[in-house]
Length: 465
Image (cartoon, rainbow, N blue to C red; front, side, top):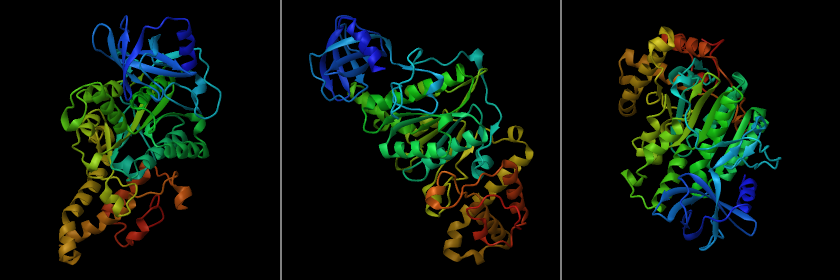
């Protein structure tokens, strides 16, 4: 990518020079102003620096964000116009690869063929070409399929604070899509730690799903400009796989909050006045710019799963609220659940989906899911009384509800394929039909005599009772 821009630069005259450098934001003095989002380039000692135009200050000055490290930049360096916005090379050969924001290989492999490029600032397809959400997408994860079902073409957010299992759950979704549904996955690592990216690449390869996966990373040690735009680069590849190859694509982003954070860093250096809780005033439009491109068309579909870090476990945070408003399904991970050893640490009462209605799910699924929720909600209401007075002080009816709720809570745990090498417990996948049958049996009282520990970290309850 940088090589092609450098070739273009060598044939052109500079349009201006760097006047100021403020961290990742530079002020460029120009004879003529290039349009917003145009990619500009400068070079020093065989090192290319790409900029993206973000603000016109006056007739001869603009602010741009740097898409590389700013080491070596200085005032007076000539700047050239590349003639286009940031674009990435696209090819069917992108599957199985590990790329950066420019579509350049990070896996030591050959560069992608530079015969076709796509602008990362693409527009959503026309409404006349888009299709609505399709059928339910089974994941084999009991608590998800039962209480917050996925749907093809929908957007799902996995919310949680640090260390409650967002990345593990997302990797399990990727495993499910590759193994159960034979689709392809595009993973956008936004502000990933290098260690996390390295581990993910090895785990995807060892799971045998790398040939159906494309990984695009903008790492934590890179400039905010990279973290701000790498999600759009990955989304451009997902759109290419949908449009050109007609694939069903799982678009995975970890972590959307770091995209918002990078936007906040850039916004303050661009001189914008902070808005609510210090976030950028453009927060909602930046989130919408990305989310509104995650659509399915008649040619293929994009189903999105996004990890969202929740600062201080506060679900009312403006960034979390802005992301939440675009989602069809919310999976909320609870530190309280994780503290009890309930993994996946999904909070069954806060999590939910727009699909949770009788018309979409059918009467049986809806009634079983509501029955499970009612038992778990009643158990949560009684927890303080049990802690103070003991379970013996409850009525016979409440004791039965608590006993069944505790077993359901343990039943909704599950060993994962992606953690099998660490835990030594093989992962399991459970069909929705089996999950419904098991939960129906719990609610009927078929497992009332079974010890709680027999329900913990297992697949289905077949053969017990």
